[in-house]
Length: 386
Image 1 (spheres, rainbow, N blue to C red):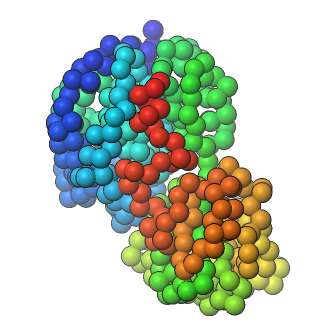
Image 2: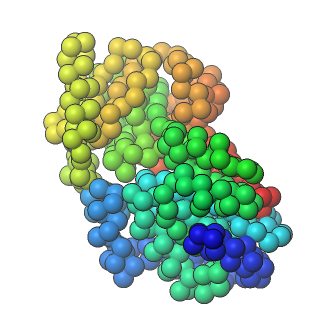
Image 3: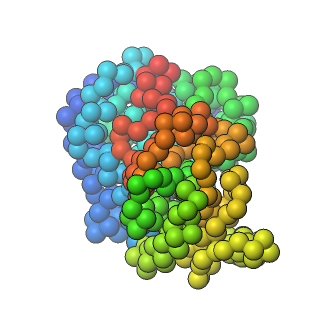
């Protein structure tokens, strides 16, 4: 029996321990732990940050801002509202959650619903980022030792049938985050219920009535957070044609300012090459574009309303659009929409039909809270049902 299997068996047997923990004790441990991990001056963060900065390749300011965007809305009353919901796992057993390599801290979006449902979980950390999840669970267990018996994290080579087949066979539920290859392999291997969150990207909309300066600043923040590597990162923005030029220039200026406030992290040759190719393509097609350093932001004013994948490194295309943009090729691959100004009902409905599950003002798209349901899925209910 592998170490993860042994751990999972212990978690399943400890489910009754978790069900006996009062809400107030659970919330006190959660709030105290999360507050410490959101404070870059806390002992937990000072011990964690060197490893986390290396694995995520974010700048210190970028890491702190990213963790705040994920975690700040899960403190206090939002967390209490989640924990006090009626969903509860009523029998023994564990669930398996496969975490992605990025963004860091994503365990919070599945751990809080699992705590609320009193559902024991074995988390699989990605080899590329194996630091945050064990550090957080260890700190949570120090504050409430009973949780050491009901939540655990392990790292193993994905796709190993000797490890994964028994886990999939015995887990009440498998929750998987990751790229297409990872999610596809897990869907094939899973023998029971599975919930998957595959790779997605987000968009922006600047409609009538928008203040261009505020819209540009907000959209730049939604682009720069996590260096544009999260599912809620904006990769393309639609605007009214008359304002496309002015908005593109304002967005480039805002990204340039953010490059000082939230410096980009370490980049790789492939990423820089992708931005160079995007800029060269724009030149060849006689498109206007703005940008200085390769990793500090590139804004390309498109003449095609169809969405093109961004190479990352804070690269975004601005598409003039007078109506509903063509989204057919992106159905099921879109996560959120950052909105400035008016969003016509028909356009809103088109984005919903394309799979967008989060609409937020520009600048707040990546600042989620405990009430957000990724892809519309209520994970607490899923954990409880198993």
